[in-house]
Length: 300
Length: 300
Image (cartoon, rainbow over all chains, first blue to last red; front, side, top):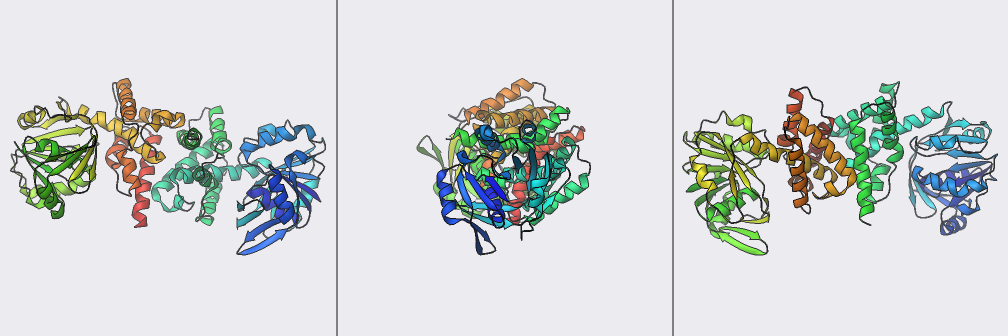
């Protein structure tokens, strides 16, 4: 199968490596320099002390024409709008697109895209890009995918590949695919970034754990979660399994980068406001992280 | 006038220096080593690039007998209980005590003290201890004092000394003396410590300023403040005047020390709970700072 992966960050490289083992993959990157490095070296995956390699093609984003059977958009949510704008004119009506962004904020844009098939995925792997063409696979998780619009055809292949350490599961309802991850991200990411601690500290520090529970309660209320206990147990389990890890939002804050706070707590805050529910703790942590981003911007 | 100052930290040294210029002052310290250093060198005050000196007497706390006409307790609120316990047996019934602690939490203990005169003071100076016998006077403020119990006699002298850069004002109501400072400390200290920013950033960062306003609203509600606008304007003014300073709570957190959070947000949280008022933002920042203190304790 021919697959396009848009984005040369950690998730783009991770998917390109695994899919590149059984498919003809082209990675579309922001810079020609990164494309050259990938064409010359392939993609290297670092896992448990070993260095694996998959040969893939690569080109800058301007070259994307949508001729591949499936295009995977593996950019951050806050980069998605500009990527879609830059490829809009070349997008074939029969294209199949898969979106891997965190949060729910981008879903409202998808109904307007004039393409045949749209899929939504949620990635639970831990991965970190190392240079232009290498990615470290730190935590093996699952990719869940669901049809947003169109036919399941191209995605069936995707879920049937059975790649070691890269399981893909099909789900019926794209909302449940995104909500589960959104709830996890909404609690773990802002709190670890605000307290500047690793994930496990949210459970091990009794004061932080009280805030963790309060924030979850507001998130559950704003999103009208039905199975609250199951979601809560899932967050605790993710926190425990990744206890020694720094969350992506903590890493972003420490590196002075933009975070995904708008698509996570920003989205939930809008949901709460739309229902006239007051969520002071969500509001406070949303502003806390926005303030940290502002500090970085103001100091440039 | 003979004056005892209990405590060799920044406020104890600041008061000992200024009062030592016109009075016979004895500083009571935790260690004999610090007493020796003060007896040998006097107290040095660093201000605007100059080094001033005042000769004072000094002794370890065990030597305090309460024979001085006024004893000033210049220790942190969380140290006060243990200081009072250790001097309780020697405390003369005709003693005059002045308390300079932040917060309101200690006021409930004062009614049980079997002494003649009790005064309450609030200190607005910026000061930082430098070694055993030196203090840097970074921000010149006012000391406000009021009678809690007994006669104003010993304190009259105190307010009439007219020391340059050390103004003392008498107030009628000890509650208003403490509340003004408590409100300022309740907003500026926890937020600067949580965001790890200097005071001015609370006004200059629009996201932090929104949290600042929300936290003030809860504090005003919990303390049933009557003149809300005046208190708010005062916090803004203090924040502006000290914009380049790090708050004491930020310094405490950075140094891994205990903070005054129990006497500040902890006290206000109890006030709110006593009235069945929900104050989620106060609760969250109280836990945030307690969690930071716990991290330090857990890492020892």
